[in-house]
Length: 225
Image (cartoon, rainbow, N blue to C red; front, side, top):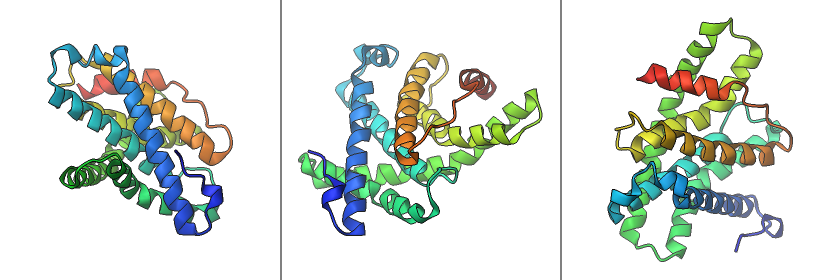
């Protein structure tokens, strides 16, 4: 059962409850993608061991959770300045909220430590990767026409989900990503839906359309090969 933040009193309680609800939503979306036949087929589930399938599921969960963290600290998030500290408090509580959630499911302590290390590792990795993804997107856009303010806004909007999609796909495939574009597209699509839904909830308005996103991704992936 989800915690109702409206029934809590303190800033810390509200932040912790919100973080808990967010990680449960992220885990649910990861499980939904993991269960889809369209995802399992290009992921070659029919020849994978249970251990490898579990590893892929863990990477999906981490991808959705780290995407939440990157979104909550995104500089272009359209929220009142006074809410920034609140959102930062939620972001800081996300890893702990996920560990607590796993603990409530009966996960053993040594596995919880592994999860904490994995979350920290992927977050640090994707924070660094954001700069490369942003630079590549700017280079792509500027190759067609001079960059305008709207182009920069679109690039900034896409950076978190692009970064996590590329990194998550690489880890799911253990680095062997060549010829696995279908799997990448499915993962990207699921992450994008989740990302935009969460941003809409936070911003209370409309998120700009992801203009030319598919074309940009196709060119970006071709350039990475």
